[in-house]
Length: 566
Image 1: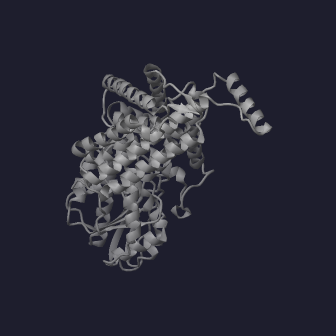
Image 2: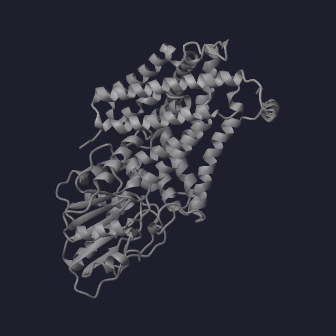
């Protein structure tokens, strides 16, 4: 093929050089975002997703957003058009080929980029929510949409009428390989110095170049396809397929397929909301519908506990704070029965009755973390007045946000030991302002309308975390006086920072939420309150979680902060 891929020195230089250059710049100005570098020269769908996240990374007004979008669109279309021409094979099937004219390739790539941005805008909005309230369910919902839609458009922008057909298997495999290699490069980042990581990025850029070359070969082969010379039945199928394409020139097959991927994921989410489909461990005691509702909106789902005052002498007290979508107040009886002599009470999102009993509710709904923290403080002090002992706290998911707010807003509370289950770590990494904020609000309302939580969704939670979530978190994270244990479900590793885990972190194989229904997590809580200082922590799970966290950073929002702040 006219020297083949290795003869494409210009393609290799641009692809490798672009990836390395962006990574080097990000290493200086935003090291937490350098995992995005290899995607600058990836195949068009992944590259467009790379650009769209940068557009959403800064809160801009509509005029500023449109201006920035226009500039990025022109730059992306120009870069992709250059790569198309550089990747075009010289000879295919013994015939010389001519690359498309620059302007033809430019407009084709511009149309594809706009299409990808429209299809993947919900994915980037979900990732914005993940950066605001980091936990795994929205990430796990977004990645299938990203990958499925990108695969359907993997041949886009190259060749005539690409939108009329689905990609060839080889083209889809090259895009999948690009996704995997970008993830592996990000996973290697915490273990390498800058020079070593740039070398890995260069290899990823080389794979990008090979994928572009494969994309060009596939486009030429499709344009010069001939009827099979052997096997009559293959000729019949080929002729029928060509006839179908000629009669359906108006049908945008690839865009429709990409949109159908999005519709499929939304449909599954709707079925989980109704309880028709169940995802995740049954021990959580709830459906993944609740998780996805809070996931897309920025909340969390947990199962808490409550118990009546024991008739035995009370030696201590535990306040259990469940998360978004939890019920009150009978979920902690298991913990109460295993803690004799301890007053175990479940926090009520609605507050206390006149007699001090938690007000019963069904599906904890939207609250700001300031209100949540204030109500937690009142209920913790009520327990302290009756036991005259520091009150231990078990907080899960959204409950951990309330804990951060309580500690920051109410100094000197009689808090004993603290257990964080499925904790929200480093919330408020971005602020939902400007156009990105409007997109998040729209998605919040959409999910709220198809979920059991109402059209408001988690609006108050989102706004309050954006305002104070980060400062509240770092207030408690930097306080050396707390005795705490954090139990991280392995699934939540996709949203964890790319940093070494402190000694007080235990990783268990589980999904986000409902960990008090998990026998392993519950035993960790009991042992921690009993004073066990050598809690079992699997080194293999910790290593796996940190590798997953680093790999997932390639597909999250750009982190504009230091790699490991504080």
